[in-house]
Image (cartoon, rainbow, N blue to C red):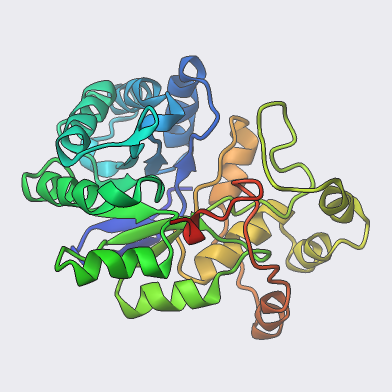
Length: 304
């Protein structure tokens, strides 16, 4: 299956609704993972300066282009600025240097979407955003945005008279739906992109080094035979992961599942063959627990 389902940004750039996430994939394993993902049909790959695997993403992209007959324009590539240089926030000049370094590691002249990864560094947020605007205007990226920004952070950029972000990548799943923030983004024509879509699964980030704010009680809940997402998945004849990803894309959010297992890669792409009915969508709205899990006890969208 090839993923042809997309969401268009205000720039006219189209983002595939199912992308391949690379968070916590070691650089030495990333090239093969990306190559396999693109062979499975993914056409969006998400990485970041902070992930330490941009070189692997670039190598996997080159292999796929050579072996699968793809062209660079067939694959949407997202990467992100880590906003700190040590303990201090990066300046506008350092922001521009960072995107050049990311492009070099990726082996690309241009990425499709470049984001500020988090809100750390209040004093330099505007300067960093000015750097992204300059990178966009110079053609180093086809679209720009932010990640983990709250409504106040977004308004801060707009009130400064700067370009409105094209996207905001945030934690979104039935347990963390952020309805007010999503509504705010939609009003500003900013596309919400979802990460950690599979957080409600009992196995989410259970491996060593996959820190999260998930409690053992939450894990145990997901392991029960009558766990709500297990029952819903059975109703639609899909896996729990497919159901959660399907909920995201049905809401119009591009999602970024990560798996190095080729079978699961293909399963995670197959989320367009079913539609969750209105009654179940209403039921899921009542599952919202507020804050996300990916950053532990810290909610980056409320960070100064």
